[in-house]
Image (cartoon, rainbow, N blue to C red; front, side, top):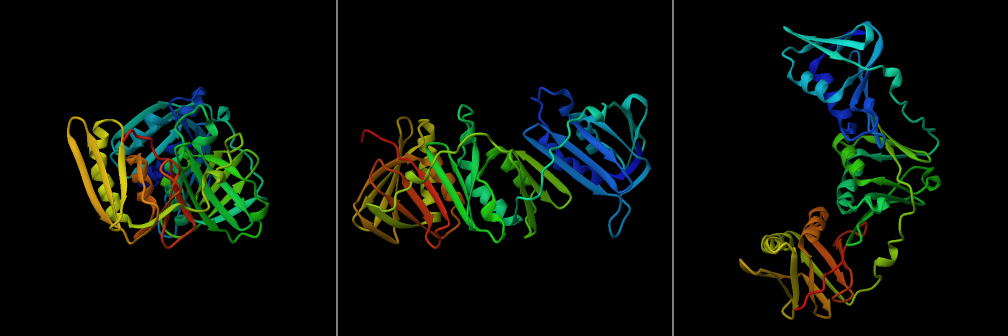
Length: 380
């Protein structure tokens, strides 16, 4: 294999696939990036068995020649060293030549680096996915849905299914649900695809979705999502992003969400978030994160927290609306802040069914998003 390639394009492609590199893999060749060079362009592949990413760079675009191929071929190069050396090469044009026994020479400007490559035939094949079950979503919408739910997945590997986000597909509705037993986040959208009703529910790792989100373009381009029995493929322009679907049955979370409330209120989102953020500073010092909310008869709530060493924070917030019983609630301020950050609305509706029942939060002007937090029991 021998070719020249423009540095910026190679770095961009490396940046995409490097998200699938893991140093903890038990398969040594997966610590490398596979390079395939053909007349049409160069394909980079990386995988950690859970995620596989393939990025294609065409030989030329409308304005410039990006790759010049002298000899087609393939090689696997150690990812960590390859990534670092490419970024530090002095010139814009990079030459890569693979000689006998996969010895690879990289030249740029006055630099020449030799790397011992690996046999590409030993690199695992990417999954073959039949494209009969497919979903199409705008890139910016998918990115937003991931942001609004993935933070609530469990980090406890003892229940692997809860480390993922459930894609619940019912008719023309797609709902993302994440739950770690202490909080829940959901976001629902209407899907235009004709075959959406034939798609199965799937669970995808929250970590995987966060890596996918970094690759998704911000602009409103359509992403094809192909679903098979145990893999899902995201097709993003010149990038193929494969993810393993988590095994197991996701618990029925619908029973957690009350249909009516004992107390309801509408609160300005920014004021509530800033007050809780200040109270969090003290609660964090006691390593409890506990903040208290007390509803008062003058259409206000009091937000407070205390630290045995530092003191106490107390703030009043004017409500837009409150109805029902006045309650005193304690909750994890970090969980509340995480939820408020993704509730993209000037005012939020908060519903309570009692001091020790789930707290339900929604944007005031929307029903397609929901955040749930379990309160804490405190002695006072």
